[in-house]
Length: 188
Image 1 (cartoon, rainbow, N blue to C red):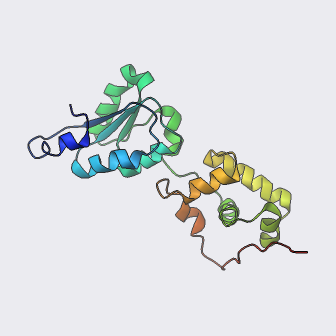
Image 2: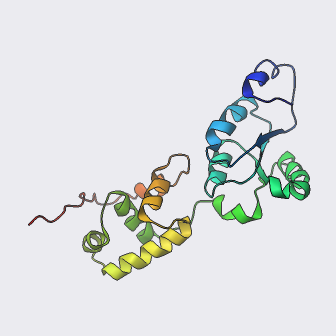
Image 3: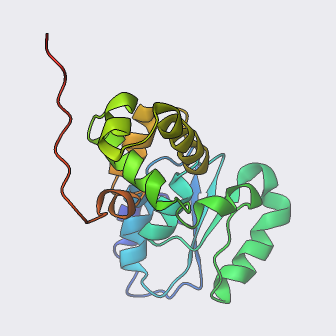
């Protein structure tokens, strides 16, 4: 057992590991910085994160960084062994409550369009005018998109979309089609 990545540096040439278990004392919120170096060092070895809790979208980030499984400390006694068996057989294993975070949410093209305009700073009335929709329709699409993304506000949605570790930006911001002019505010 090693307490830091530095301790591992001299050992990797002499040992071959079946699985790497990364024990995190608190919430995993930046999995790329934790898992990325391990995944590079042990390319063919599955990595399982054991943590007290994991933030909603950190699961996807951890998997993208190279983790194969996540186990919560509260469930350790019943989930660690099945998780290890799963990752050793080439499967991905995450807590049941986080299964939706494995794949990006299925947003409609209109929801993506509206979220893209939100990220650009448009207000609901400007989005409605730009897309020739009623403002209530824009609000309805935003409410639906927020639910799918697991966010409660425009700021949370924009942060999620723009975060490269979460990987949602390209599906929302890379829509193509006619270029949209940035929102102009009315001056009097």
